[in-house]
Image 1: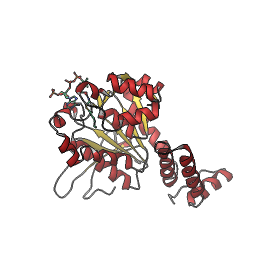
Image 2: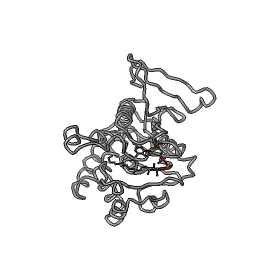
Image 3: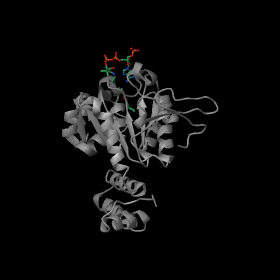
Image 4: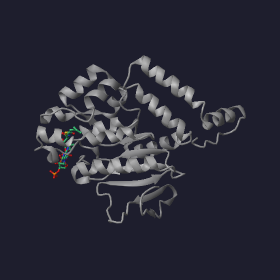
Length: 288
Ligand SMILES: CCC/C=C/C(=O)SCCNC(=O)CCNC(=O)[C@H](O)C(C)(C)COP(=O)([O-])OP(=O)([O-])OC[C@H]1O[C@@H](n2cnc3c(N)ncnc32)[C@H](O)[C@@H]1OP(=O)([O-])[O-]
């Protein structure tokens, strides 16, 4: 991993699948609000755990900055195939930090680009899976929706309650729910502020699978490992192509997909993948 002055602690006892990584910069600065680990049989899954239990992982500025920094480090790290973002069993995240932002003014928000840095989360090139247990409210729900895939525990509670505290979703809630679940659901969720269950979220297409809460993270790691068996280069192209569907017209999206599809034939991994199929063997992708 590309962390400066990296310190790696192997967790004795649960060594098989877990390496905890702590940042130890020269300044002795460490993450205060998140934990980062490498997981999976090949240690190729980056796990970021939001860890601000006293505030139910409310997304204060420092926590979001740490998440962005950890994502950028995992994105640069060639040993990492995919990233899982999770919280605790009680809360993925109970929203943006209300106490931190309650006295913000319009001009402050405008001058300082309040929460504009959140969009870096969507710039991550590797697959990013949210493993959601407990509350995913407001900015917490929006953070999950910035990920590529959402797995949820059966006790997870989603919602956009901003309207109940005199504001509206600001981290993409109105747009991403409308795009994934349609206008009626988006309006109902954003205008009532009501919470909805993991099962409802799955039914409306916001979540791809629901698991018993104590298995959510393990299942997300398994999914990350499965994705990690493919060519990292082709995986990134595929993620980018799917994301284009949320940003353009169908015709433009189809043109983009075609150019990337054709482009894969310029890669060594396409040659390897198809040769492996024809030769009845497993592919050995080189990320080239
Ligand atoms: C991204 C841009 C747009 C986004 C906007 C938003 O997200 S707006 C936000 C949208 N989200 C909401 O409106 C949800 C707000 N939260 C809730 O409604 C409830 O906390 C609950 C229903 C999630 C859990 O109820 P429960 O009875 O099980 O637990 P509890 O209530 O006792 O909380 C424990 C501690 O955590 C604290 N804390 C919790 N959340 C936040 C927060 N967002 N902020 C700060 N602190 C928060 C809470 O104050 C308390 O601290 P204290 O007083 O002990 O020092």
